[in-house]
Image 1: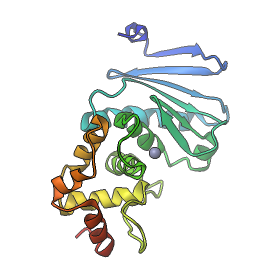
Image 2: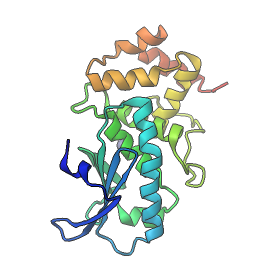
Image 3: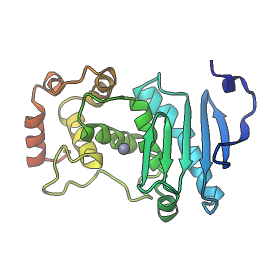
Image 4: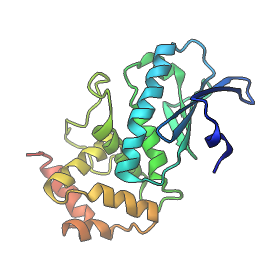
Length: 222
Ligand SMILES: [Zn+2]
């Protein structure tokens, strides 16, 4: 039992080593330590990111991994140059990106899915890890339409292993055409490090390559 779990405050304020304020929120057994080193990010946007976490993370945990970390850190970090990244239950998001794309709050959904995934040194391919994270964003995201984010369109030339939402769309297709529940099984085996490419054949009767080729020829969801 970690010491701060015993605290009864719902919101705590403490000063991090970098002298920025870390706000600690607790809800339904989950703890979020939220901070920003960019004071120009509006409180409203910060609040939306925080509430996205508390809405989505318990759902992801319930669906994919009940043992996921109960304590999560999210930081809006001006020193981060990409959109967002996650490691060891710490999410870093670019405040510049968020200010430019304020509707894209499900960046949080994608990133905290990586915490739920917890593949460690994954035995599977990176495109699948990212594809599953976007599959989960498609499934549980709160604001995808307003962010103009979707997996809906297949464009000629897209590969099943194109990562991110390109792969998420392939996963939706496999769930629909071959095996409902395969994504949960893939996720579990990746976490358990029992994943091999053979799982595709076990679950669907077809190799990954055969599924991919069929998908690229006929990507229709109907
Ligand atoms: Zn990712």
